[in-house]
Image (tube, rainbow, N blue to C red; front, side, top):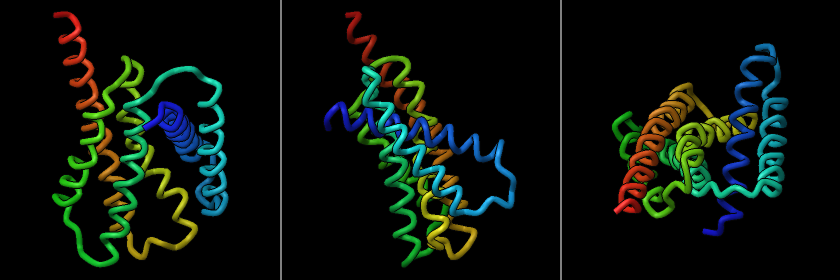
Length: 172
């Protein structure tokens, strides 16, 4: 995948994570879901625009955000037809970490951002799809947040291990 695409997805994930924390901290509980969706859309587009001006290579965090988004979308699709247990979510998270092996972190900042940006992927999906009434029950958003949280921790650990293994092989 091209570096510009990965940087754009990292920027989108970073600003959507900032938007998530701003929404939680600053907006009142009665804020409409449409307003929240607009904030997420502006954050994602702003992150893409911001990433075009920053000349930093963020391979692993960009792919981490994309895999977080894809896990959330796969969960939504699967739950339309089957009941999913938390162990199935863990399997999906482990499978979603495989692209990190092919896009290892380019540096320490990239490795540190993989976990939060993986979490940002499912949160972005929730923020964008909630006004569309996709979620029929409370179980689906909870499973998506669970996948984002567990996946964020796993992506962070996996990318740090990949960074350390890469540094060790460069020292030999």
